[in-house]
Length: 168
Image: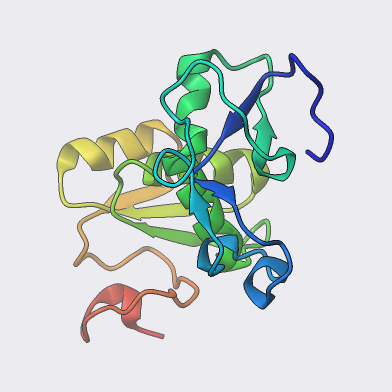
């Protein structure tokens, strides 16, 4: 969104400002910019009903979402979206999610919407998290040490030797 109008319903995420010119900004990694400023930490706002924000760092909120439903997309959802974007996932490819906390369930919802032919496999410690993952559409949910039903693309995280996710 480059030109929000006064009165538009928008959200502001953790990244409140960056220089927009450095290598990191040009690559879409504004969080690594040396001029990065965080909403609520370096810039006023974050817990307010109204605030001033740079247009390039606000995101439109579709009317279909209530404020309560939209709120996670400005924090955990932003973290999850960035992680999902960095995977380079293409529709039809399998995705493994390790852990199913604040951003995991939002990533699963995003994948089901944006990549409807992709299967999502969730590795979580508690049965409650695994049940929630299946409820949201995970193709499979198991323990972190379980073998997934199919081979997954390599992960960008460092996993201990012997972990099923670290096998190629």
